[in-house]
Structure formats: structure tokens, C-alpha cells
Length: 347
Image 1 (cartoon, rainbow, N blue to C red):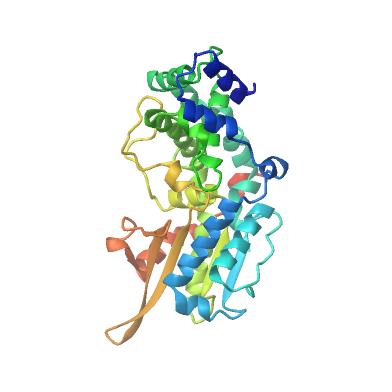
Image 2 (image 1 turned 180 degrees about the horizontal axis):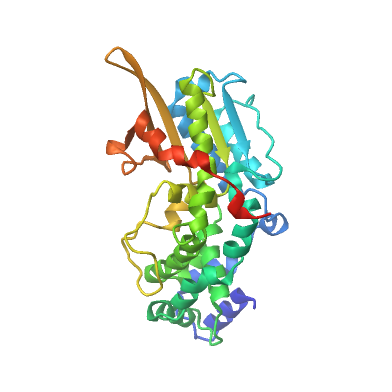
């Protein structure tokens, strides 16, 4: 279905409730041909996100990034050309083109453990049962009301599928032009957007969050790497900066392992809690990031360490008191991850 053609036709026949300006925006809108021709390439907006992130990090830690020798850092992407492009954009923000990018690992990779875990792919990612709560939500009065509002606004009498409506939602939130909002956003009210955000939350919760026991197991692997890196630094070795770049899915799994953003009750179709902690629009943004900063300090004449966590560059105050973990607290939280095994993944 050429949805835009149907929308314009409905407006001409007086069936649409969109205003003339909104319809004009839709009529003038065109999909970036590069997005269609190179679906795995990084858009300009994506590049800018990572370049800005690198720039902000450099400003926050100027001494660290101004004096990085070749042995002082590690920049490693998970497999995928787009992820490597993220690293290149990040380096541009650091304004140090001499920094080198390591090659992605072949086979199992701790920073993308879900990708080559066969049982996760079979039993969770590709399992229709993972969408049970989503399918239940499609039958709720809240979702059906949102669907009805959108259909009336568009003036389309044919029943629009859930998949097509979600495509329109994606066109709203992902496809911008010249930093302006997408004209497809005009077909949604704020209540409609809340309903579609919740669909995404349910998908991520039962695939990559607390709704899947494998999420915690898969999140162990990058956290074990973090602990080992910091232990080496504590012993006088290790790197000053380690940057792992991967899919936001891995960030959600690591948060699950750390018991972050957990709600008292599981997310269900029966009730959408507007104050829930688990929100994919926060946890799984394109440039979402989990940072851990290790600080060395003097205490009563003795050298000591603490660790501060940041999520999307905001201090994680819930993880330790005032957001600052003593070395003992940090090690206690991550030490169980060192026992992570791939046995549950199968062959």
C-alpha cells in the first residue's frame, strides 16, 4: 500500500482530518535514497550523534584524551560496518584522527554476545512467544482507541495492519530532514505515541530485558570485560580508556545484569504504567551509552579507588550511594559476571 498516496487522496475527498499544512508537508516529503540503497549505512544524524558524544567526552576528560599513546587505549566495535562508522564518528569528536580502531572479533564476541548465542536467537529473538504480551496489547481498548484515532485522522477506511502502523511510527521517530521533525509525526497524538512506545517497551522487555532469563546471562560478558580492565589498571597495567561499540540491545542486557531500571512488577499488556522504569525510548536510543569511570584517590595516606557509573552521560545514582561505588562495592557487583559461561547458548 502506498500509504502517502492514500492519505493525500483522502484529504482531497474530505475524508481526512489532517490540516492542509500537515498534508503539504507529507506531499513534499521524500525518503532519503541513500537510506533505501544502503540500509546499513550511518545517516548524517547518526554520525553527528557520535561525533557530539566524542566531543562532550573530550571536554569532560581533557587530560585523558589529550595524552593517549597507542598502548593507552582500546577502541573496538562489534561486527558490522555501521558500528565501525560509529567509532569513526566518535574519533572525529575526540579530534584525534591518529587513534586506531581494532578489528571486530570473528565468532563469539563478549560485546555482542546475543548475536552468536544460538539458543537466544532460537528461543527468544525468533520465538513468537516473545511477542505474547505485544499481541495481547493489540487487543486492549487503549491500543484500539489509538489505532482508531489514526485511521480517522488519515481518512483511510481499509483496516491498517499493526505492522504498517508501526512503520509509520518508525517514520515519525527515525526519519528527519534537515534536523526538522518528520511530517509523519503529525498523524499521531501524544496518547498515540505513548501506546506505540509501550509496544516497543514490551518487545524489548521480553527479548532483551527482565522478561528473558538469558538477558542477564548475556549481559555478564561485557561486564566481566569491564571488571577485568579495571582490575588490570588497579594492578598498574591496563588501558586508560577502553571503548566498546555495539548494538543498544547489549546495553539493555548489561543494565538487566546490573539490576537497573527494574520495575516492581513485570510489564504486561493489561496495564501500562506511565511511571515505569523500563523505557526503550531511553534505554535503547541509537547512541545510548553506559560509562564507568575509575578514580584513584588518597585516603588516610593510602591509595584507594572508586567507580562512578553514567548512563547516557547522567550519573547512575541508584547503583551505589550517591552514585559513587567503592572499589569493594564495584567488584562485588561485577565479580559474579566473571563466572559467565556460554554453555546455555548451545552449539
